[in-house]
Length: 188
DNA sequence: GTGCAGATCCCCT
DNA sequence: GGGGATCTGCACG
Image (cartoon, rainbow, N blue to C red; front, side):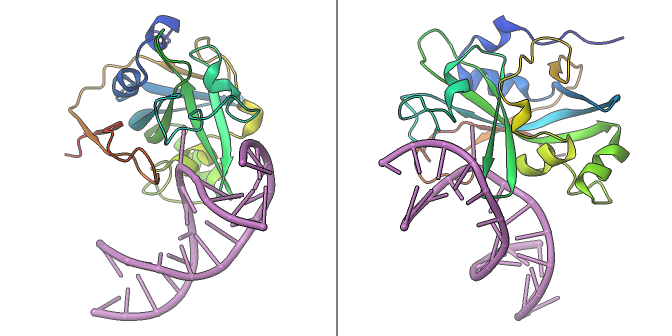
């Protein structure tokens, strides 16, 4: 029985709270008639004018516009000439912008298809990084700014997954390193 | 197992 | 023209 899709009120809360609560929920991707899915196991929160590490720290531009737009929409950007990264817009009423970076998922459904899209065998390095999971799910900028609160090509549902959560500093940034806005499923 | 260089392109200054 | 919310392969041991 399918679980409930996370809705606007879920995403209309502080970005780091949403990032924490997304751990353990189910990311679903429908592509070419295939349904791929995995448990979200690592996230990071990025804020607005208050967060120097965020793309939205400075003013709104063409690239970061989704972070200022409606919550529950995707924000997918291209980085380092090779990789796409999947975010979902989330912020409370006091913030001007914000999004949660999905850094890692535990693959559950249509794993063979993810391997085909990644052009890699094995499960170990399939979706354990933001660029890897975007590739495994066939995501690029054509999926930027789509509504993830409705059933479609990309959405997130509740799950009954249980586990404890660690929070740490964020990865790969040069500013805002003091904030503990990275959330990971406790290993083992 | 760890560590580092190189790839590679889009957006912003 | 510079740098980036990364990944891969290769070196080393």
